[in-house]
Amino acid sequence: MFDSDIIVHRLLAASLSIDPLPKSIQDKESMHQMSDQINYRNRQAQLVSRASSELFILFYFDQRIEIEQGVICGVKQDGIRVMVQKYGVESLITLVEPENQSQWKYNDEKLTLSGPNNRKYKVFDQIEVVVSVKHGKNRRKWMQIELANSKNNNFTDIEMNAETKKQRTT
Image 1 (tube, one colour):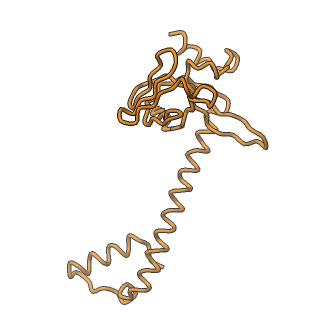
Image 2: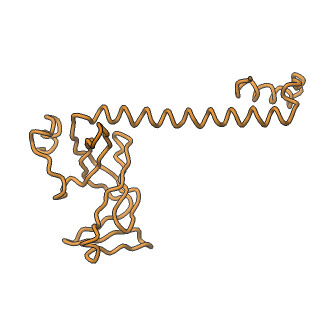
Image 3: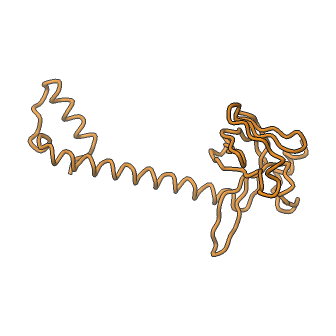
């Protein structure tokens, strides 16, 4: 089995008339199988890399709660998608609950979501968010991003680390 770099360099050398094309590369069916295998391995490597990044982010935030700046990168009828660039994490923040749906207005053309108390969210707005890890049943953990000024997050000063407390006071 050839490495993808070797195949590309041999094809390049053959196209430039530097070396003849090896017989193992001339067979269309074997090349098709090889490229399928290379693509499969590449996809699996990408998935492992993403899973590894998610795992280490969970380790990092497991015992911390951070208040950071986030950028709204998407607006939906029921919430906003926020990216925290400092950590490279992204999450959907649900703002519209079924019981208060009539209080919110979504504008598909302007990509805005307007709610009670003159709250308005649009793409590329910067907002303050709380980044933490939630613990579920069976030791399951997941990343949680919430609005910093939301009444839903009930973080006490005991839960926040010293750096976050310092950021909040300055």
